[in-house]
Image 1 (cartoon, rainbow, N blue to C red):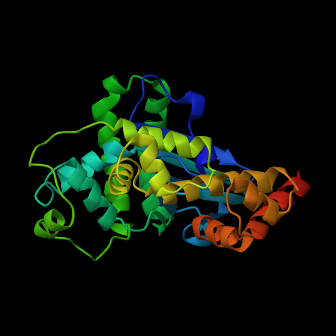
Image 2 (image 1 turned 30 degrees about the vertical axis):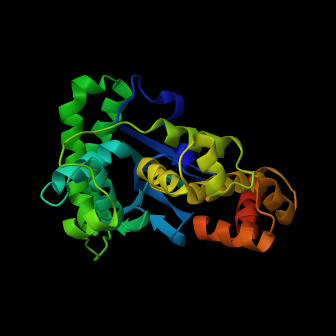
Length: 312
């Protein structure tokens, strides 16, 4: 139920912006984050999830929504079966753009709007078994079409199925009551001309993300990152947030938390030593960052992992 249930090598080629899979889990997974939006529908069994919302149970009739680059893990209570819809972030932003075309200027403006509207990146929605049951035939067909490949041929049908699913789920998604007017957006952040143009990620953003992924243990600063890609520190922040929805330092925290979780699962190394290995010199600070991102303390997360191994 975490990002380790990613389609992985099974994702059809060429790339598709919607991939849907159903899997059953018997052991704890995660926490891991992926650069796509995930909608997870619990179909059978139950589990305890841990993410930015803390440690919470989910069962049949619950739907979990996860924004891109949001850490999440789970501990099945015996087993849990779920269908996960993986949505490319650009695809989701495009939908927000056209849904709110009267309020936003362009795609980048739509991304800012979405980040304000959907301010909680990890949510558990309690639809109930009856309402969630409406989704099952659509999800099953989406799984079949995803496995079949040929997204181009199935494009309209897959969009129709996803939109039907989203129509049922959307009323339960928590949104922000804060709205920023077009005038405020223009004055607080320079915006592009009113042009319907969808641009790819800037090379500098990809380079920065690569540097952070390859060396999360390094003591990165925004100034050092700016120097590496020949941009100003303010440009680095703007370019990176536009690409990944997080600041470079928040992205780095996510990477360190992922690595810390892996070491907690697979080694008996003291937590303080692990904290230093992933780039946090202060173990108390590391514990606070881990809990903020995952919803559990490092010791609690390790206990869950060890408990599962003992049962096995």
